[in-house]
Image 1: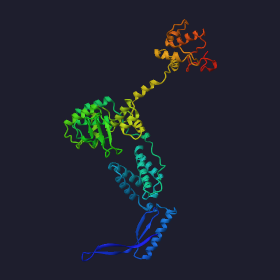
Image 2: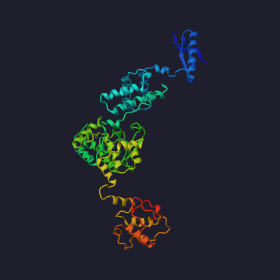
Image 3: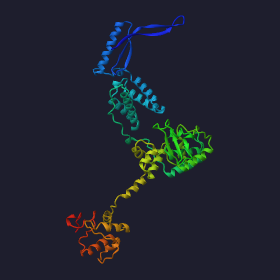
Image 4: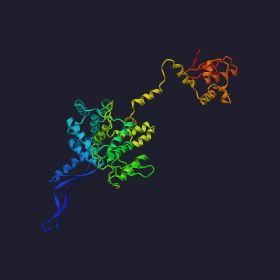
Amino acid sequence: MARVFRAKYTTGGRDGERVTRTARKWYVEYRDADGIVRRKAGYTDKAATQQLAAELERNAERRKSGLTDRFADQRKRPLADHLNDYEADLRNAGASEQHIATLIPRVRKVWAGCECTHWPEVTASAVQEFIAGLRRDGRSEQTCHFYIQAAKQFCRWMVRAGRAPDSPLTHLPGRNTRIDRRHDRRALSADELRRLLAVADMGPMRCGMTGPDRVTLYRLAVETGLRANELRTLTWGSFDLHSNPPTVTVRAAYSKHRRDDVLPLKRETAQSMTRWATIGTGTDSNDPVFPSFPEKAAVMLRADLADAGIAYRDESGRVADFHALRHTFITNLARGGVHPKLAQALARHSTITLTMDRYSHTVIGEQADALLALPDLSSGAPDAERERATGTCDIVPKSLASSLAFSLPERGSSKAPSDSTLCSEPTDSGDPGDTRNPLKKCNVTRRRAAGDSDGHLLRRPGFEPGTFGSVDRCSIQLS
């Protein structure tokens, strides 16, 4: 039941004493459809305020019963107000200022391009038309995908915040970013890395960093996989150079996934960092390791690559910017045979797919080497391939020949030779294959010893070994 009352308040009198006064307006206190107690200002007339209270109660009951739209008030609010609340909610949740400065302008641009001012005007078709306009203006698929992601994130927040029943962009598909890649990164080879470090060490002051400073930065990036912003925030207190193994810690406030990351260091890198610290400007635990870290580290790296004679963009169009050092780190782990789950942990990725698909680069030479596993289809090769398939190829290690001679001919028989040296027994069959194939020689000797003077039970090798015994159980019939 709603309550109608006049609020009382205390104010200062003429003589300085506190005086209690009664408000001129009447107020209504009621419980809304969600069970929350609300207070609303009424009128100076009590009867009119009582009518307002009855109307508020009726609306609450109708919304509670589902007879009215509980989101009607939110539909009337401008999208700009919702977006301001969304920005404040992101900041209160601890999102980085860089993330907010990137996401919010994208959402604003989408709604401005769709000419949406209120929530009911937001539709998937309007967003698709806006994205089509971006493509006509020459924007990449990756850029269009970012705008779709930003709009969908805002719509999901509207649902979570209880401001909309559902998202109109739920079924809006993303863009296929693989068909229009304009800034793919590549991994540097070991030779390119050595040349880069050698040239940077002897190079001039660049972007506020000396040559040795840049060498330390590049080496740390390519051996830990730390991102540019993570390297920028490192202090000397982040390192434990004398532990076993040496480690570097990225604090949760600066990590991409907002948790402390403790990463191991190569011992040679830790020793290099120790020597470099002795000639640095300061090694207090709160001192930054790279106090002059440039805002655009890619510009600095590109200049060093040019001095080293390393192309910024390769034949495939892939670039070697500063983040390519992280790609190089993970790719080197994959090339070195590191287990994928361990590589994922070192890369600090949420899924193994991201580690292997996006960062594990292969070169055409490695792909060509993989083709050596395919069978040889040249002329004269079928016999060799057939013998390889049955394990009876010409070149057979003694241990392999002995074990196969012991097991293959005696399928279906309880007898087995007690000594695998039967494979070395001579035979007078005159078959030139006896000297060429020790396994066949062993089989002929044993079959003739069993009473099969003609050796009919021994069939020529096919793609499967012959099954001795009944003829109808032989896997391949060869005349």
